[in-house]
Every structure is written in structure tokens, then in C-alpha cells.
Image (cartoon, rainbow, N blue to C red):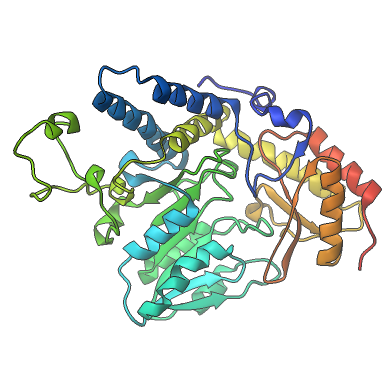
Length: 403
């Protein structure tokens, strides 16, 4: 895809014609590029233009595989470090099953996390795995607080790079150094960051990173990415295997036509991240849409997207200061993201305010974790200052007094 400016990118999202969409942190809009790519795939599936159904199947596999290099480029990873997964849930569950843990081992979490960051580890309690919770301080997850709660049995730190309820962006550099020093797995949920703010796994090493496609990557089609740092791959136990987990130098078409094949043989499994995929027929449409959505991000440039989003959030925060609301999002620039959360008082007030905004086709959410949250606004690359002025004008006219 050719380089693109933000005005042109906005045209990729026709839903913006009749609404102010400020909720990518919930589920984003899909761009035309993604839906058109999926339509092309559906037409192929409808017509089977290949000579045989075997070649047809292989062509679908190749179309799906385009998402891996696009995702690798996004986080400066190697393509063989990327697996395609169904969602963040799927990827985190794979990580929990693959990391070698035993009875008495401990997993560290922040109390700001979205429930899904916790549930894979909660399920492992029946295996004797324990969970330690680090309390936030005014919506901030401090590395020193995490360090204080690490024990000799701590094996995993699972954390979101951006917290979903208030937009706090974690200091992954400090956390990565801390985990490497203590031999702890760093598992990162990056779903509220990738697509909005850059993340370079070469500059900021993490062990495992997971990101569903349906939020800031703008691909709400049931496909996301799982990154595994190559140096740590041999330590993991792949929890599943299918025939596409197996190396097949001759090609599957030729293999299936060989009379002597057997379901049991001396097969060689992949040793890269693909081993963590289902190994069977996958979500072709989802991966094709994800690849197209990520290519749109590349066409804009991740650094330019982050700069644009910062301009939007600066404008929003300045406007909120003139209103009778409390800024919940921590103010430090290095911890900012595309999420700005504010509160008009009680949860009831915030929900009532959200409903008034929705009545005006201004889409925002109300989210809380551990009593941190409020009205959550997501500023993405397809938004502009007019969107935020419409929000601010609506808040001025419809805000309710504090409880």
C-alpha cells in the first residue's frame, strides 16, 4: 500500500460520516481495505478459480500467511517469531499452557488488568499455580511495586502494555530489565497499544506478546498475533499440534498422493512460532483482513500515528480541564496512550453521561477496574480535532453535576 495521509485514511472508514467514533479501545471500525480484501477472498472461495481444490486450499493458506510479515514489521520482530491466533484470549491461553510451570510457582499481575489477562492463570490454580496481585497507586503500575512483590517462586509477570480502564502505558523497558535480571517470563498483552503507539521488541525485549486485531489494529474479524522471542522458544511446550505444524518439504499436494503414507511417522515439527498455531484449517478471512488493516497502519507510519494521536489527546485533555470533570488518565507524557479517561463523579453519573453522548452518536465507553476508571475516550488515527470538539461541546451542554 502506498504512503497515506490521515485525511485519506479517514475515507477508509465510512461509518465516520454519521457518527463520532471514539471507542477503538472496545472494538474498532474496519477500513475498506480490510473488507475489500476479505471480499476478494470470499469471491475466490465462491468460485474456486484454481485448477484443483488442493491448489485452491494452498492458495488460501498463502493468502492467510501475508499477515505474519505485516505483523512482524509492526513490532520489529522476525517473521518466524510470529504466530496467528484467534484473539488475545487465545494467545494468552497458549502462553499459560506453554510456559513450564509447576506446583508452587507464582504469577504476578496488576490489579488494573482486564479480566482476560488473569483468567488463563486462574485456571491453572488447580495445578498448584499461585497468583500475586500488585495494587496500583492512583492508576499507576509502578515497577518498584512489582519488584517488591516478586519472590523466588515468581515465574511470570503478565501485564498489559496499556491499561484498558485508564490508558496508563507501562514502562516495559524497566519491567523487561527486571524480569531478565530475575529470570522471570514477561508476558505482555499489547491490544491497547499496537496500532496506536509503536512497540519495538528489539529495543524493548519481551518474552511473549499477544495482541488481538479487533481494537487499535482495526481488524474485528477474529484474528490476532502471538510473538515469541526466538531465544526462549525452545523452553516452551506447544500445547497443540495439527498437520500444518509439521514440515513437509515435498508439499502437501504431492504428499497426499503418495500411497505409502501413514498417520504415524517420524514427522518433524516446526520449531518457530507457527508451531503455536492450531495446525489445521484456520480463520482465513480474519487473517486476510488483519493483514490489510496492518498494511494501512504501515502506509501511515507508526511514528506519525503516535504523533497524531498525541495531538488529539492533548487537545482533549486541554478541553476537559475547562469542564467540571476529573482526569483519571495519569498525566505523564511517557505513560500516555490513545485512551483518555475522565469522571463526572459516580459510576451512575458517568453511565448517564455516556448514554447522553450515545444519543448524539458520539461513541465512548464507561470502564472500571479496581475502582479506577470512568468515561473512556479512544483517540485513533482516523479521528480529527473536529471529532473531539464535538465531544467537548456535547459535554459542555449535557454534563450533569457531580454526585
